[in-house]
Every structure is written in C-alpha cells, then in structure tokens.
Amino acid sequence: MPIDLTSVLPSVEGDPDARPRHPEKVHRPDQPVARKPAWIRVKAPGSAAWAETKAIVKNHRLVTVCEEAGCPNIGECWAKKHATFMIMGDICTRACAFCNVATGLPQPLDASEPARIGEAVAELGLAHVVITSVDRDDLADSGADHFVKVVTAIRASSPKTTIEVLTPDFLRKNGALEKVVAAKPDVFNHNLETVPGKYLTVRPGARYFHSVRLLQKVKELDAEIFTKSGIMLGFGEERHEVLQLMDDLRSAEVDFLTMGQYLQPTRKHHPVVSFVPPDEFDAYASVARTKGFLLVSASPLTRSSHHAGEDFARLKAERARR
Image (cartoon, rainbow, N blue to C red; front, side):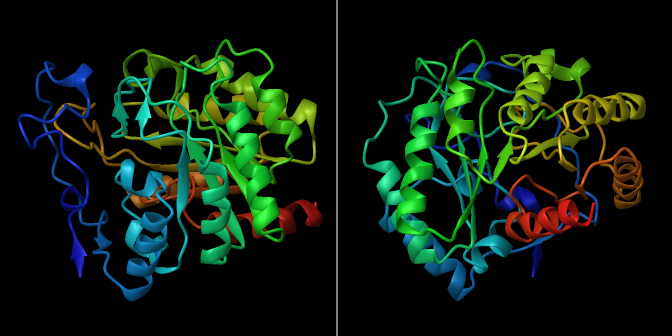
C-alpha cells in the first residue's frame, strides 16, 4: 500500500518535556510543508524480512541512517536485509537545514561499536555494506580512526563483503582523510548535497570547494578506490548550477553521481522549493553520463546508499568495459 512520506518521517513535535531533536531550530518560524506529488510514494514497511533486519539492528545496539534520517526507502531496503549503519552515535555536531539527524553534543565513542557492526554485517549476510556517520567536529580527527576500526572489524567478520564509506568532510582535520583512504574501502562517498550557492542556507557548516577537493584527494591517494558523491534537488537551485557542479565533480575524477529529491523532514527545516519531476531527473542523468561519470543514479527517491550493492557491481563492470 503506498503511503505519504510524512507518515514515516520523524517530527520535531512530541513530548514537551523531552529534549528537542533540533534545539537550534526550535525558535525558527515554521516553514510551509508542500503537498507531495503523486510520483513520491513508497510502500509501508512491515514485511517479515524487514522485521528481521530491525531485530538484528536492535540486538546489536546499532544506529542506522535509514531510521535517523527518515529514509523513504527503508521498507524496500530492509526487506532485502540491506541497512546503512551510522557510526559514532546518533547526535551530530552540525545543524544542516535539510537533515533530520539530531543535533547537539555527542557522547564519547563506543569502543565496542566496530565489533558489533562486524557481527551484524555477518549475520545479515551482506555482500556490500555502507557505513556512514554523524559529523563529529568535537573529535581531533572527526572520527577517521573509528571509521578505520569499523572497516577492519567488517573484514575480520565478513571477508567477502565489499565496503562503502560515506564520510563527513573532515574539515580542518589534517591527516584524517589519509587514515580512511589507507583502510582501502571499495567505495569512498562524500556528498556535496547541493550547489555552492545554497551552502550558506542549506549546509552552513561545510565548504563546497573543500568537499570537492576531498574527493579529488582520494583519487590522488589511491586511484583504485571508486569515488562517489550525491546531491538533492528542490532547494531552488538553477539548472546551470547543477551542470557546473557536475563539471566540478568530474574535474575531481568522481566516478559515480547520485541525485534525489529533497524532502522536508519537519516544518522547522528548509522548505521544498520545487518537486522535480522524473523526466527532469532523467534529463540530468543523460547530461551527467555525457560528462564522463561511470555511473549515474537520478530519480526522486534516489538516495546515496539505495541499491548500493547493485551499483557497486555496475561500477566495476563499467570500469572494466572502459
């Protein structure tokens, strides 16, 4: 049964005595929540495999971006026992205008987390796993060493599983990127999220050209690692800005571009300026392919880790073909 996405996305409202999920947004004026078009529909989660995935995640006391960010594809992915693990806690030190992950002062790192993730990956039988994290600007290396420990633990418990990391930007953390690249993940993903002209309002804690340079440096350090980046559409960006972003990513030798529709989590978040129809996503994908990306995934419901395993197989095949 198709459902409207607002029914699966967590809200800022709730128990008045509870700590606000987004304390920095509480006093902001409410933004209008636009009615979603017919092409943005998902199936309600609830299959037996979905419940089994949920139980494994809970039993190992793990956090997933699927839940914390209110991903619309959770029903589909968890029904296939695909989960994207979010390491280093569930509280982020940044306050991006689009994101529903809680903001605040995080807890200390949990030294047992890498082993628990390794065990969960093995229990789920994942051929490919995506590991992402909250931003941890409070840590000297933004958690780069923790990423390495997670990669090491997965390889120990499930040696045949390929690993994709979706990292923060390691802004002003010298040597952090090098640690993660040295661990040799199969795919290194870092999302630009939006065009540079929207960073001040959408992603104020980040720097566009630093993120582009981060991706470029991955290739300089290890040309064999696939690189990947994603953006959301619907913030009010212009077409020429999106095309320039594609050129910037290709200049950084990024292999894989994902593009999806921004969906507003709550009335306190950045409003959706436009719902981009599927044919426009198709047109952007066609242009991106002509610019030289090995792989492009573009649709309203595309997300960074959606179909990541299948996409990794396609990436390898496309590199071999060229």
